[in-house]
Length: 69
Image 1 (cartoon, rainbow, N blue to C red):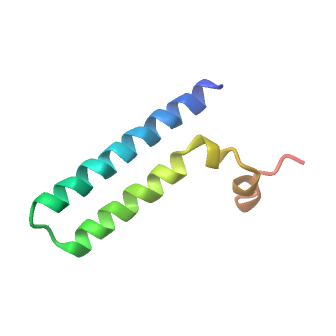
Image 2: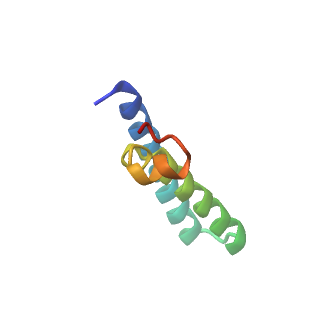
């Protein structure tokens, strides 16, 4: 496994941790539902984007024109 992939896996884990913390915070405290939904949506998308399995998939490379064939 490359060092770059390990770095992105750690970033992904950190983002999912922030997602869980903010989710449980919003359950226990009165928060605006739209702001909470937006923050959780952004954190979920960033975590999915940082995932090495998704970033190294063939579909990801085809979608962004990084095909090496």
